[in-house]
Length: 125
Image 1 (cartoon, rainbow, N blue to C red):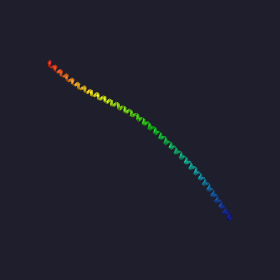
Image 2: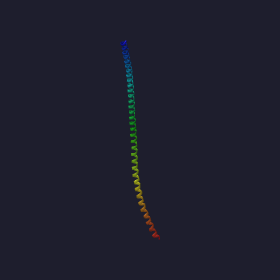
Image 3: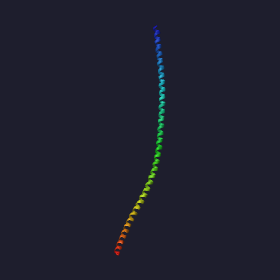
Image 4: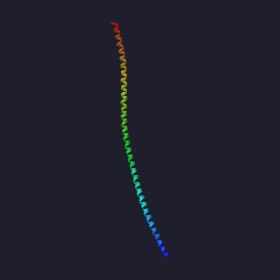
């Protein structure tokens, strides 16, 4: 009877051990599946992030090209306006000098006219 009881206890212990091994194997399988799933998800997210980064770089490159082209166009316009302004200033300076010379000539003519009128008044008077 004691031998039978020990046999049953040992059998029960082996059964519990087998059940624990089965549970551990199941948990190990679940852990492996979870690890694999998380690895795939991480890889997928990393790939998506890399693709977004590449798209951002491409957009930035396109934007930089547009800005450079626009800047070049603006620079050409500014240079053209600067040339026109230089010509206008030169023309204005020439016109101002001509007006000053005409004023000097006009002052001389007016002085001459006043002198002539004074002489006429003296003769008539």
